[in-house]
Length: 405
Image (cartoon, rainbow, N blue to C red; front, side, top):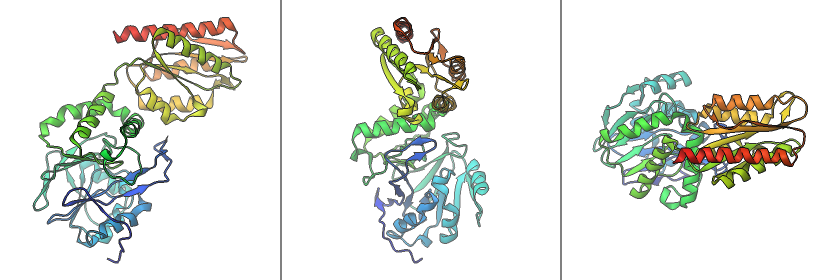
């Protein structure tokens, strides 16, 4: 195959290479902002049966082929394994299969169906289940289905001798960079991007993640590397333990001593109310995190909410409705289904005030327990109105601290 290797593969172990793509310019993904870009990771196993683990997003097909060509002629690939059928990992898979003509393509049972429904494959896809394994010659791949992490087809592949867990979207993050390994990044960057990824992609599936983490020891995997489909590879034992502990904590969604005040404002009345609420939270002994949604984005809010025990939402009324930016963020949060949160509602209005009830309905739909009466203010709040907002913050803060005991 005539494919000059203008891009190089990166060696992970003696026989495993990263052959993915770095997307420096993507700034929106799954409805949230990716300020640091992303990667679409794919891996080449050089064994008797040369095996490609996952593909890349369609526009990056040539990146994949170029990196593979720096190691071996792509036509020598024997097996392809698809751990996840989402297009950022399979967008060029059918075309790659037509070019390299592998002996076999493997996917989970749900993955087999999804790939056939997504694309026009010229060859059958062999379904594998949890506990199945295939010999590559000197090494063996084992498979673990991880349904709904975060699609029905999701699957882990484990390379036995090299002790690599190819974890598809689990343990990933959107982080473009010239470095391949997690230990080459600042800890704060890793934590924020992993946290943001979990909050915006996996929070909804926290129950499944808890089940997986509880069951994982039964598979007796000696994990020396975690190689996700996005972001850096974990190879330091401390980092591997760290990211697993992060996931265990995030999946539990415990209450914390932080409260999110998220709002938008039209003529600053709702903003004044938000500031007084934040002061009440502070004086009750709770750390307020205040976000004006028109100055941030929904993914930032979701990430902050992951570490907040309370959410207090505020909006003016516009055309008998909640403010559009608040409807956007609360619809987004409702879909992520955060658990174990308490909250309250506030807002200003001119002559109708429907936003307050709509905010209450949103929070109830999110299973947020409302623990204080809503504060609803007509036009510009005066000193006594702001005192009511301050007391709302005090009440929510005290209730949160009581539940943390």
